[in-house]
Amino acid sequence: MKKKVTMQAIADELDISKSLVSKALANLQGVSDETKELVRRTAIRMGYRAVPVLKTNRIGKTGNVAVLLPRDDLKDSDYWGKIIHGIEEELSRLQFSMIVAGIDTSIAIEDGMPHCISERKVDGVIILGQIPYTYVQAIHAADITAVLVDSSPGRIKLDLVMAENYGGAYEATWYLLDRGHRKIGFVGDLSYAASFKERYRGFTAAAQDYRRDRPDEDIRMFECTGSRAGKVIPFSVPEFEAMIVQEERPTAIVCANDPVAFNLLQLLGKFNLSCPGDISLIGFDNVNKCNLFIPPLTSVDACKELMGRRAVEMLMRRWEDPELRPEQINVMTQIVERDSVANR
Image 1 (cartoon, rainbow, N blue to C red):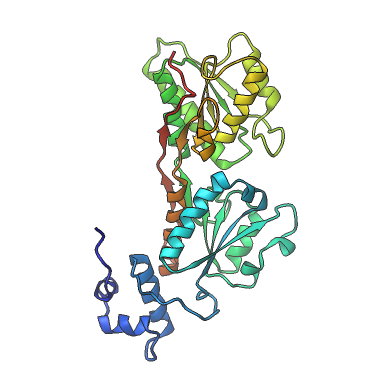
Image 2 (cartoon, rainbow, N blue to C red; image 1 turned 90 degrees about the horizontal axis):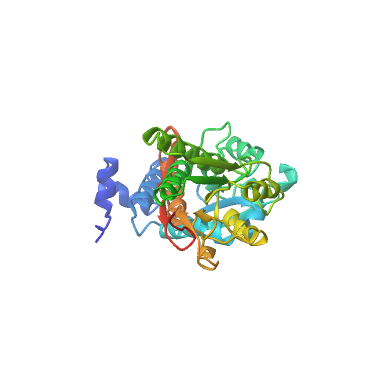
């Protein structure tokens, strides 16, 4: 059982007196605002249960955290919902409120920035996914603490939480190789997301390492990494079809994410090919729909709830010490086996 956090523990952490901690948490006179804020943030970080919720709307003391993501991504509750759930749970534990705000990436920032951010009604922002750089730049310029999740860092150095995309795809490729597959493909448009590039890099590294360790074995790698056909399918359909109609086609495919795999399952039926009989598929992200398809999809679990909790922890740490060098946390992945991969 986790040990209860006391005022004395907070005092020991900050090397101050227990009396000062008590006065700071009670918002009594005679304690500077800086000390009150430091004690409060430390108490929150340590999990102290009796931290008062501040009622003032001054910048940095609203008790609110905004979660910002592209409006189109709000429709994908199966993916982003897990991350948001992890964020909300951790914020609630720390007695903060969460404001989820979607942005229309097609309009100018002057019209698209949510009011809760432009009017400074939040203490910090957790940015999910691929929002335009101008938004990140504006939030940073306004001196609002921000943490990125599953996003491209761009030119501004901010704390970042990612799944271990490279390692997950590397493991997925070896998973197929260990099951006897020697003709393996990768499908996913590399311009769709930074995570796709890392997953492709893991795929190619696994193939290179396998060839180096087993130079006598003949393996062939296939790629479908061109421009996407639209917003729904993040890969080129003609390119994929060209891959599977040729005489020598892959017996297994590493998919850049689960929606890619779901679309491939439908496209395979168009050519009277079955999964996993003709072509095995392994997805990435392990969304809930993996259990609903036939066959149920084997996928790389990225532990999205944990990514959300880690983002909140990084936000708290940044408040406590704004001068710390920004860090990137990679949450390790794990393969969840179902029925979409056959042995060869």
